[in-house]
Length: 70
Image (tube, rainbow, N blue to C red; front, side, top):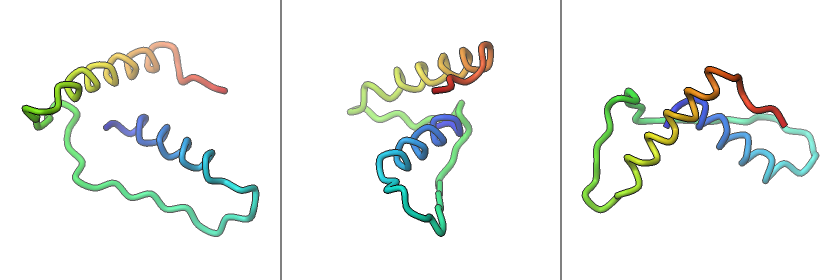
C-alpha cells in the first residue's frame, strides 16, 4: 500500500467512527513497509497484482491532476 491509500483508509475509518465528541488522541501504526516495486506474490491471490497496478495508475492521475476533494 502506498501512503496516499493509507491516508484514505484512515480518513474513511475516522468518518465511519467519529461520534462528534472530543477526541484526545488518534494513532496510526503501519508495519512491514516495503518499496512499491517489491511485492511478494501469492499463488492463491490473483487480484494482488491487478490492485497494485490500479493503485499505481491512481497515483499517476493524482500526481497529474491533484487529489480529489469532497
